Image 1 (cartoon, rainbow, N blue to C red):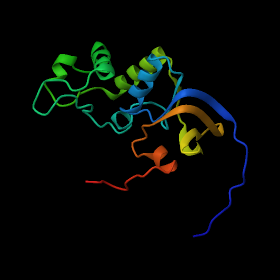
Image 2: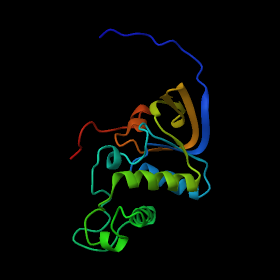
Image 3: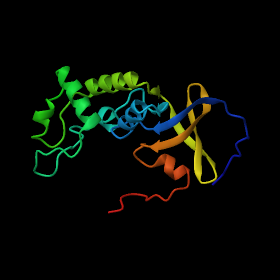
Amino acid sequence: MRTITEPSREVPVLAEADVVVCGGGPGGFPAAIAAARHGAKTILIERYGFMGGLATAGLVTPILGHTAHESDTPIVQGILKEVTERMHALGCAPSWEESLREWGIRFDAEALKVVIDEMCREAGVEVLLHTLVVDVVKEGDSIAAVMVENKSGRQAVVGKVFVDATGDADVAYRAGAPTTHGRAF
């Protein structure tokens, strides 16, 4: 395969945070909201122009299975419950109690986008949309920054803690962590 050598260059630091969440899907946005609510300066990086992952971009519904098999006992609550209640208030999802009788929550994808945006804004999460994580910068065995690209070009986001919520372990893979190609089962 033919290759091209990319010239070395200095990259501007776009932002610095305590917690950098890479991916704004059903795992990423709750992680970002929780971190910010606990006082951490938090940045969420999302490649699309909205959050929600496959629930909003791929219209994969219902999502968020939250009860034990054949049970109405919730095994998760917290932010998921709050998201459901807010969508219900908009008339776009069943009540929390009603959703416990089903596997997963039926919802309107556009309402989920609105609710996630509101909750991130209220928590103080800085959201970078249309921004793709393309590489990591390590110091020893730890990630010191992620390299991102968007309409402003290549930039760095520096953090103390990084959450890989990309859905495909993109950040972990780029950092050299062991990953499995395809399904492990």
